[in-house]
Length: 277
Image 1 (cartoon, helix red, strand yellow):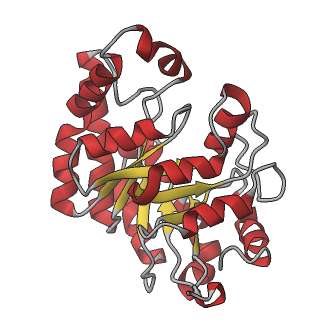
Image 2 (cartoon, helix red, strand yellow; image 1 turned 90 degrees about the horizontal axis):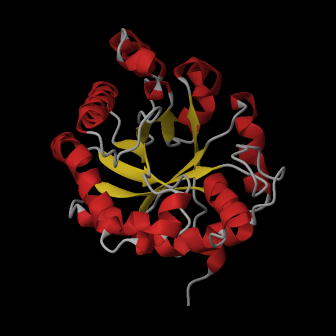
């Protein structure tokens, strides 16, 4: 029998823009914590002088050996777009995100799920609709997946409106690639649970299983995408971490808050609850 007390607690990481790195440098390096850079979601960054930003990121992270990732671009499109002209733009954005990964040494990129509340209510209304959607995602991400495999980056598909937590697992598995896995945003899952009838957050963890390699940790109220500090919302954190403890995929646990100045406060909540370090 394994002594629960002997099992090491998972280590918390955080998501932040590059401008916050100096503020959190000691916390990140002392714990060699996982980090997610948020700047590369912006078109003005991707189309601008992003290599200067990348150089500053690398400078700030000297001595950091935690796992590094980025949030990939997502504004203004879905990865299952039906429009072939828009598809070309999305392909470009994915490649720009992977360029940034390669430049800073990131090994993970978050992309947003294409599945909507409308899909949940209508996929069965037209047989084959989900397979068609998966085919459109392959048309968009196929080249990016090959590039990710070549440079050692894993694309993790994050739930947004997803009601059925198994859909993203099916989508990720359809690529047959170790570089496509699943992400869970706890606040998005809690919104879907409270507002659209999705299962609770820990069920999302169970459904993902060892395909789960990334988690956005944020508290919420089940109504909106709050990105609150833990304890301000109504997520049952003990159930979430129990579900996580059953996995062997070692997902990155990334605090993703609206107020970046409160990252240590959020971390302290989970540490004091005995759930993480």
